[in-house]
Image (spheres, rainbow, N blue to C red):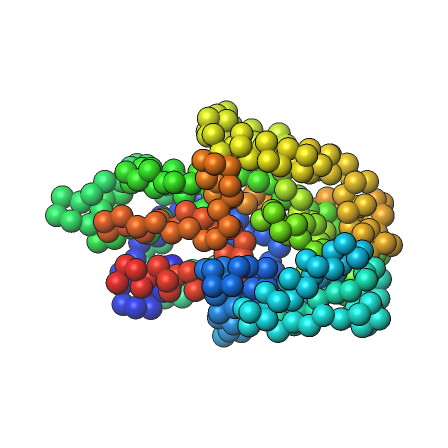
Length: 377
């Protein structure tokens, strides 16, 4: 966002509460450059993913950031998944994503160890280093004279006396013509600080990852995904070969007990109380209680986790997996228990609040920035 505004000639101050960049969602995701096939045609996600795939890859190549457009397979492991796989193929065509349905023999040419009755080959999916993208942006912003402040949380926000906005940080008051809230896991709280009543609440979901042992990495050449459940915003556990040759497996999706809770022992009474008080949380639990129990069991059992992966690659077993960290997804939830399935951006006088930007927001980041900058203009 800051890069786009500076590019347009604005003076920008960035407030980051952590002591380093990409500390949370950006630094804990799967580093996948998404193609845009999953999303409803015409939605922000669909349009911005296709454009973002091109723009983030171009930015990476122009700034020396590693990227590999390796393509991926979405595999139907039995005949019941074929209708959903065909729907994905239709969405890919509607969204302008290069993809084709292939038979098992052709799928085996890409991934010899995969098990499927059919697959969708998606050519424009890739792997990138998103923290390195942030480092490149920081370098460009520093060269352009932007005011970048680490360790500087926003503690209070009010209208400016002569227009604009004022943000109290504890050590200073920042005065500006406009405010853009891109606070991720805390975006709803920042909006409330600014006097808004956001219609969605952030509920954090932790996604845990394993990786294959080095001597088992040969089982996966690229990216292998399951056919996702259309009722859920999560894509299901999948296998991803990273830029360094390691193979990550995951993520699952369990309710995090803290907004930045990367482990079961990371607990925040305030965050738990916020989730418990929100009626949408209980309605979501009633809708997907069985799914939630399954995810918790998979979190606690490496055997269950491996069994999910073995549907895609039968040779993967529990002994092949080593834990390797987790990420937390900032999922916006409505009071009726529905998960917001698209990017959610709300405006107020001299303010723009990005209230829902989960995956594929990293892929779409430059496009979201252009969209928001247009609104500020």
